[in-house]
Amino acid sequence: MAGNRVITSENKIQSVFMDSVSNSFNPDKHLKEEFVSNLRGSSMLEIVALSTTIPILILIRHSISYNPIFDASLKKNDNATAGSKNLRAYMASLSLDFVVVVLPTLLFFTVLADWTYIWAILFTVSMLLYLAAKRSGASLSSQGEPDTLRAYISSYRVVVMIITFLCILAVDFRIFPRRYAKTETYGISLMDLGVGSFVLANSLVSRQARNVSAMNWKSAVRSISPLIILGFIRLVTTMGVDYQVHVGEYGVHWNFFFTLAAVSILTTLINIPPQYSGILGLVVLVGYQFCLMQGLNSYLLSNERGMDIISQNKEGLFSIFGYWGMYLVGVHLGNYLFFERHRRNRWARTRIWILSLLFWLLAMLLDRHVERISRRTCNIAYVTVVLADNLQVLSVIMLADFIPGSKTSVLEEAFNRNLLATFLLANVLTGLVNLSVNTLIASSAMALCILFVYAYVLSTLIGVADFYGVKLKFW
Image (cartoon, rainbow, N blue to C red; front, side, top):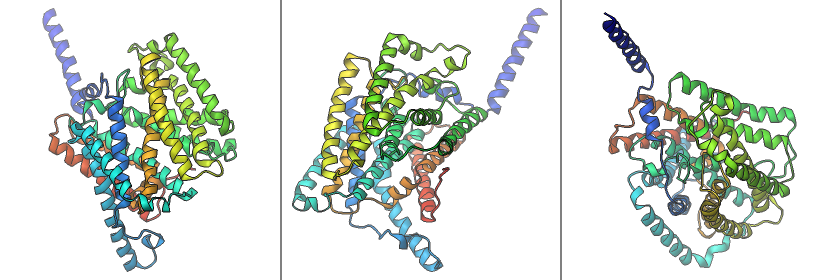
């Protein structure tokens, strides 16, 4: 009888477990978490290749002669017929942008991933030959006024966004190479660069970099509070629908929005002139790296967690120092390269190329002789790689000085005006796809089809919002 009671009890437990699984919004949660765990990443050389190929797509789009006139007349007006025609022209240009820029990027991240180096060499050689052929009229637009510099910075930020919104969904499909997904402890991958690139992209054009007067506390609260609110919304929704979360990335409760909010809070509390922010950033990074090498890295990379809030979210909390140091260095670079007086494209472009090369060399030295690159701890080697990669992307885009054509496109304008909305909508769509489709068993053809529809729907919605003047801004 006792044996029967034990068996009955076990059956009840199994029944309850099976019922909870069947009632879950995301029954494959643990399998999906394992799918993105224990990965070792790619190589710096492959990151360099990808960071060359993707921005060249932007240059190709700029050089294409077909570009429907995009100015105020393409925006919505009071005349319904004219507005309809303008919308059709706008959508035609938007679709062309998608086909030339977004679609090839998606293919490079999936079915063409095994030929990354070949495509990088082909694109680079073709671009050099094109530049050589056009050299006679190269500098007609290269004397570079501030508006042109702003256009290049905008294009760079859009490249970061395109890579981000493609990867956050593609990583859940088997068609996406595991070497591009986030690493577990040490190493570097395409997706490892995401959060660092966001922090750096914001710092380069921040109020501090532009040497704009510091915000008062009321304005600072209005600026930071949306990030905190978004962080809690993400926390509640992911827990509510039992969405897969890789705990080793930020911790149990922490997320990307909390990191951005924390960096903003520290920058507001300690506000120094941009000319000196690089020094403070370097001090923060060196001090944090010293703590990591004294044993903090072992604590952060361990899978053991206590019950206290700090231990539960140790990766997210301690990596703040790395991201804050990165932000401070970015503020200094942004001011030095773009916002000091008497700066021209030629001056900025040359120094960006030099800095990118130096940061890549420094990253290799730090990775080999100090500590291996780790996004999870945001150590100094990781910060250096992010700086090198982002400056490389920006330097390639600035070759547009030598290419006749537009300096922007409809899709770039739309994304740039609504970067936050693009990121939020991409997260929502990614969540909906994951809760609706078992991404782990999707065939390559099915995965590519889903990713194409997702990217085009996202681009179209953001484009239409921009056409009608809708902009998501909390402050």
